[in-house]
Image 1 (spheres, rainbow, N blue to C red):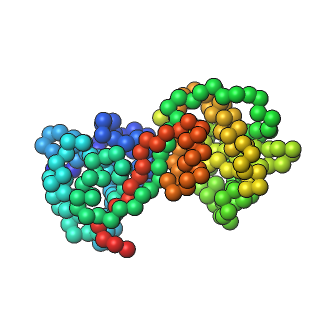
Image 2: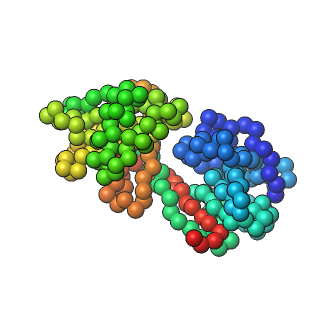
Image 3: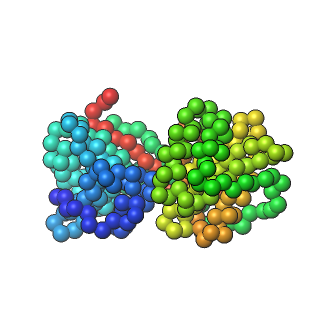
Length: 267
């Protein structure tokens, strides 16, 4: 096996092969940092890798392998590539690369879970709540306090300021949920792959939870997304957050793949 520079990538930094996991929230952030390469076995492309090296470490931001790849050959390839460096790698629970790192005895930690609604249905109406559309540039100013309250943090403004400079930030819908004149929640999404409404955040102020407001907010936002041409919806969630996973499941989302983090040595 050997590396060849990947010469055809989409706007997310991914090539078009059957073994590719379409994770839009990974490789696109390291386009200027990582080396993007096909893994070839002879003349056949059997994998894809995005990585960079720093001192005694090799960081693999993305690796995906064809399901028929020989694990022994792949292990030899990774060992030669790493040349004794400590390896950190991100791959997916449904990909052959997971078998590879487990065979090599790497330490494993679960990452975010991707859930998808394959077809956005027609939701009920009316909602009885007020949905206020916010210009993307106004998100830090208008949503910071809500973000902090919903997620029990103090640095929401910084996170939202980083979001609004992302080139995808203007592709979606940004909403504040109001009830009786008070802000009680918010929603931010982007559009990926042309037809996927990808939820970045949905938050409800704690004292207003368990009243069906999150359901109404998501239904309204996804209805607006269909009017913009979206046919599917997706999101990333912490798999340990049972309440969130259960909510998304009830809304019609299904688990598609999960990120896995591997390292060759313990911390």
